[in-house]
Length: 540
Image 1 (cartoon, rainbow, N blue to C red):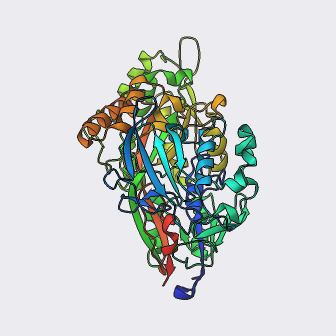
Image 2 (image 1 turned 45 degrees about the horizontal axis):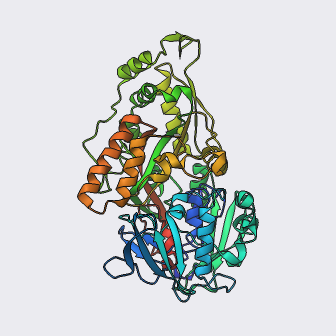
Image 3 (image 1 turned 30 degrees about the vertical axis):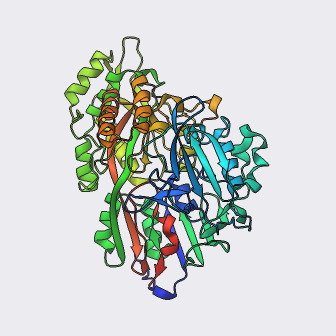
């Protein structure tokens, strides 16, 4: 099939069409964890603080980063006698919602109220729970009183501001809020944006159109329109790029490394390619409520039965290293002296025998009660590489008599309901994208297991509950000494390796496929996407 060579428009180009593979399950910044949403909203909003491309914490919505040294962060005792801290932030003077309403401490107080509500469905509820008081000094300045003095005491990255003037009414019934929020009932409402762009059109499942926000206080964005087009099938994504229907493929949510390498061999002269290694952790969450997966021997057998090194070498040309824990080797807290699960089918078979799966019928192991060793694996439908990895895993497990059935779903359903509400029965394959030295409270602490009683808040989708892990997470957060913190981090990774609530697969490198004329896009390698600096993107 031939494709027309679309002309390079260079400096006169004022529209940009971006291809990504998933559509957001919601546009609410604090409900559901999904990169598709983060990528789009980063163009319409700004967090108080963020990590830049050099992995340094910087102010975005705030005027000055508070520190103990500059006096804007003051350690204090809480009313309960705990060691806490008071941190003062000032909102930028020019920060205004897209409808002209100033961004003020009223929004801060309202966001805190929503985050603290057990029924709101907010993902990182721990952040809002820990803040026991907020003092509004004036319309732009406020002091947060945190019950813990953590090593990340001034990182307010996840405190995603909500417009009180639009959201107070939908929040009147907290339990129904996640289905009534203005972010989803009226996503083109200009009052939802306070970044360089605002959403002007939404075609569910298809595309999101953004245009400059007239009230944006920062550097004027260069494109008069940015369209984020969702093409779930990665082969179709490539075809759309070649035909000129899209200008670029986002590294955060586009091709996998193997696809990009093959594409570059064929079309390398037409595009710029950036391969950015980083903190993207591809893994398989195991539902520990499943009686089969409750047995640690079965979990260990599952990982010994797969050749992860071969997958990395053959599918990704070795560019995506095998993961041994959830901590990347690029992160300074990574422990490189932990036990590792090598590909060892004999050991896997022995573990399954010990766990009672000894009867082989028609190629499938059964226990003495006649129950087959059958599990279900799920991931995002249309992602060619994930589907290929699934088939490899299924085949390798089958050799040991483990019957694994594949049942995939569109990303919006998979992340919006199945994973978030723990509806997957066995294995769920997806990626976590984290910040440097990111404490895994929401994913591993037992207080963050989603259930109906907390309206499925939290991200501990495995249902992992381990008292020592809980204690380590608590200790790491409040340990300011780096050397002591490293010791705690090593123990956390050891428990993760021993207990295996998750099967680690590999750390991804994100491939960006960009038009030759696009300048100013800088990948970060972590959870804060390149779109947080979209106003610096330009055509040359």
